[in-house]
Length: 432
Ligand SMILES: *Cc1c(COP(=O)(O)O)cnc(C)c1O
Ligand SMILES: [Zn+2]
Image 1: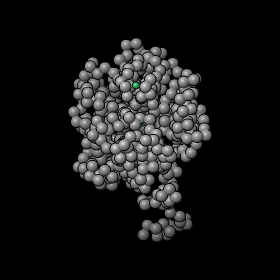
Image 2: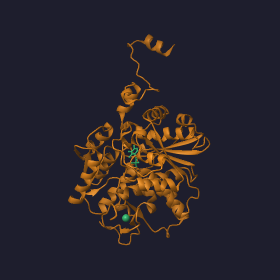
Image 3: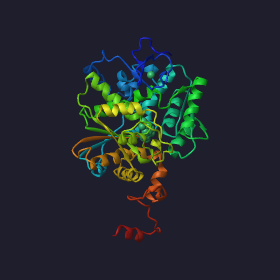
Image 4: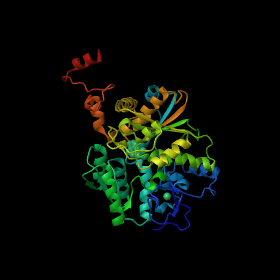
C-alpha cells in the first residue's frame, strides 16, 4: 500500500513552518522541531461535514462505526480498506454527579476515554498511527512507554498482524498496563535507565532497523486524538462548553484538543472557543512551572507522582501545547498527590471511576473554581483519560490508608470491614 499521491496532507514544522510531503516517513523537521499534519481546508464545507458526521452516527459496522474515522475528513481521508480500526472512541459523556458538587460546578460533564478498546484515549491516536505504519509498508512498530501507549500499540499491531516492540524504563509501572502489553503479544524489553534513555534507544532502533516509531512525537497520533473534541461536541449537539479540563503529561492530548478546536473554527463549524485548562501533578509539573513563573521551559529531572501516566519530566509536545493554551486563553494548573487521590475517591464513588492521572481533571477543576478562574456557572467538560482498572494497586492502597509514606492520607477511604461470619455482627455494623 502507498499514500495517494494526490493526498492533500502534508507535514509542517511547528517551529519553522517548513513543509514535507506525507509520502515519506518523517517524525521531526530538519531544524529539530516537531511536525504537525496540515491539510487544505478550502474544499471542506461546514454544513457538508456536519451532515456527513451526523449520518455516520450510529453506523453498525466498519470504519464509520469508529468514533475516530467518523471524522475522517479531519483525520486522514482514507478508503475503509486501508484503515486499522477497533471501532475506538464512541465513549460516553457523563454528568459528573457527586464529582460536580465536589468541584463546585453546576454543569460538569466527563468524557470517559477509559471506555476505549484498550481502556485509554491512546487508542484514538493509535488507530491512526498503526494505519499510517501499514501504508508506509512497515511490519514492525515500536515505542518507549510505561503504560497506556504500549498497551494500545500492542493491541493495534496484533489486530493487523504487525510485530510490536516496547521499551520499558526501570521503575514503577501500573500493573493493568504491563499485563495488557504481555497479553496482546508485544515484545517487551525492560531496560536499565530512565524514560529518556528508553526514548533515545527506541529512536536509534527505529532509524537503524527501519521500524516505524509510534512515540508521542509521531504526528499521526495527534490527528486521531483530535476526535475526543469532535465527538464530545457532537454529543452536545455542538453546544460549546466554557472550559475543557485535561491532564497533562507529554502534552499531546491537549495539543490535539486545541488543534481540533482551531480547525473547527477555521472551517466555520464553531464560533466560540472553549478555554483549555491543562492540569499537571505537582511532582511532574514542568509546564506549570514555566507558565506560573513566566520563564523558559526547563525539563524536570526526577518527576514523581502516583499518577504514573503523567510522570513525565521532559514532555515532548510542550511547544504545541503552549501554542494551543495561549490561543484558547487557557491556563495551566497543578494538583498535589492528596488532591489527585481525593478527587479519585469522589469520582470513583460517583460510579464513574478512572485511573489516577485522569482524576487531575476533577481535582484541577475544583482548584480552578476555588481560585475563581472557572466560575461556578461555567459549563465544564473534563476528560477522563484512562480506565479505573488500569491501576488497581493505587485503589487498594488508598482505601487501606497505605499511602502515607507517599504523603497521601486515605481521607475518603472505604475500608473493608473484618467480621466473624455472623448475622449479629453485620447487624451491629449497620446499626440495626
Ligand atoms: C497518556 C496519558 C495521559 C497524558 O496525556 P499526554 O498526551 O501525554 O499529556 C494522561 N492520562 C492517561 C491515562 C494517559 O494514558
Ligand atoms: Zn523546522
